[in-house]
Image (cartoon, rainbow, N blue to C red; front, side, top):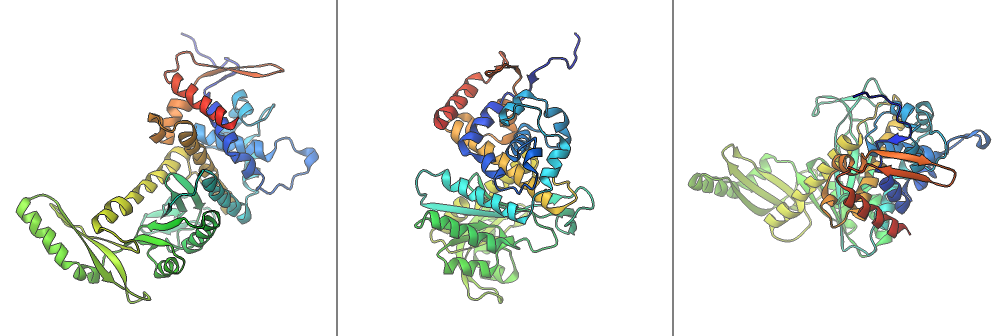
Amino acid sequence: MVADFQGGEVSSDGGLLLLREVDRRLDLTRRAAALLPDDRQPGKVTHSLASMLRQRVFALAQGYEDLNDHDALRHDTLLQSASASDSVLASAPTLCRMENRADRRFAMALNKLLVDLFIESHAETPEEVILDFDATDDPVHGRQEGRFFHGYYDGYCFLPLYVFSGEQPLFAWLRPSNIDGARGAWAVLRYLCKRLRAAWPKVRLVLRADSGFCRWRMLSWCEDHDVDYIVGLARNTRLAALSEELALRAEGQWQDSGEKQREFGWIEYGARTWDRSRRVIAKAEYGDQGANPRYVVTSLRGDARELYDRTYCARGDMENRIKEQQLGLFADRTSCHRWWPNQLRLLLSTLAYVLMEGLRRLALRGTEWARRQAATLRCSLLKIGAVVVCNTRRVIVHLSSAYPHREAFVAAHARLRCASG
């Protein structure tokens, strides 16, 4: 058995055929590229911004996180075709210069595009939209702009803010870590509510977040603008005193049964810094490791247990979406020295996630693939061996004859082509 790298026009990324169709359906990379400033002289431009943006986003979706990967990838004929280029793609230095064109205006415009895509994904006005807010750590890679030590995460990091609705991203913003975790969330919430209400005047909006976003000014703003909220509330001695009866009941039931017990109830609570008291769901839990109380402040009405279990705890799925973006699509590969190129890298990862989510929603809906994460989809549907044959009239892609998920691939591609046609 002898191996070499002389196979010619062979690609390991046959799944680019699917990503190309999703991009066409959403018109994603063309619209994103139109927002990026370009001060190059037109007569000297070899690679368009749209081509470079497709090259970068498709590569992230296919598992290539570094710019250096493009020294070889730029010669991949299938990636060239997917990027709408008929020649060698941009080099790593050229892509680096593109990233360094990013600024605050472009970052805001891309986030607005995410909201537009979310609205366009609904054929009818939804009755309710839940806005999930969360922050996470993004470890730095050196002495970068905006580098600070964060005590909770015990390291130097950035603190990006994410907003999701279901599986769809609405906002992704890089922030330094020397700030309150809720910094800027109020402005983002205000913009999102205004934009969604402009598209859907009668939609019911709900803010959902953990205790890091429990700020009375945000709650008061929600109340003044007909926005519901269900937000975690950090435990304290006053809350413990108000829910003492629930706690004693849960402890007594545990002593009688030996099994973990949970009791739910409503209490009225207002911190000294708040403008007024608000309704709080108190959960008293007692088990082998002792008491584990939780509190949630909300404007929603209903059964306390059901609101906690079915509405508030569902926010945990957003954390899975953030992990999917960071672990599977390299959202934490913010290794540039300057700030705004790192913001762009976070958004490029978000665009790659939009492609993956679009693939699940548009091509795989109703199948066993619709709930699989980006890394699984990449291994199963996107990393396919392919022989590429080019002539003057067309590009022919011969996918592996031994590919085990042929039927799923063909069905997904047919659904995307039918929809785009």
